[in-house]
Image 1 (cartoon, rainbow, N blue to C red):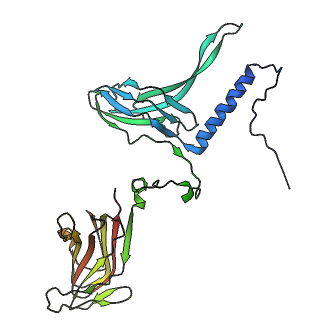
Image 2 (image 1 turned 120 degrees about the vertical axis):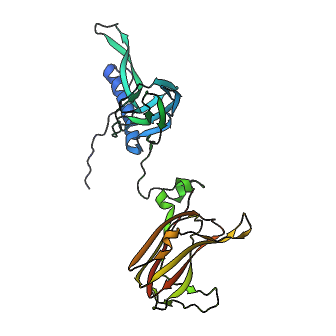
Image 3 (image 1 turned 90 degrees about the vertical axis):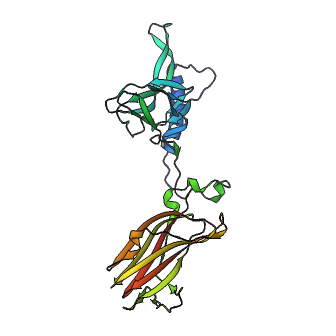
Length: 333
């Protein structure tokens, strides 16, 4: 076994009769201040913790509410009460509101031969300037101001502000660590609130008129028809809870004539207590000519998460082969 002790830090140890000098008290403060900053900078990401909201107070003035932030070095930035700041005209018509930490010596003491001070004051520095702030965490951006030609505040963009967070190791949070109701739909990233249903085209027989329309020939990976054409319809499964259809895709290898396409939102309308049927494809996307083809159409239509279904109808005029039907659904908030 190999053991190696590496010094990490020294903290003060006191005993009766000990003579203490200024270096001892400075070392005591450094120990606690350093520990606090290491905790903040290694277990958290820098940004606004609470408050520090930027609000307009007049044509040339903003207010910043009380609040707290931390910078990349782990320093706490505390604004004890709200402050108002004048906004000066900027040539770029854009101004950035940032907050940072600073400190300085205060309370001069002349009781010794050398002039000294008895306090170190920690400052919160509010600044409005025309230059975009550094993104290294030395300052925390609170807002971006848009000014008009006269220097008046036209708008305040708070989407640029960064919120502090926690650094979590992969797979370190499991069910035992989460309270009931902790993870809700609005908290999920947009990429986790949408997904694709992908299927080979497997249409059912279609004959609303009773005239005996020809059906597609169904294979493992495709549906096809000869030069006489065919008609078919199939349901597109809607994932549980999905309430918006984002995109529709139809793709295939052959199309000697023309494909006529209809995409329907169907099912039931609870509000009107009647059947629901709406064609979702734009008029210029209902016909496909040439092959191979890959029709991709943005839909972005709402679905009732309980009663709406989706179906596609395809009429092939001429020989065709269809290989894919796909739809992107979303769980919107």
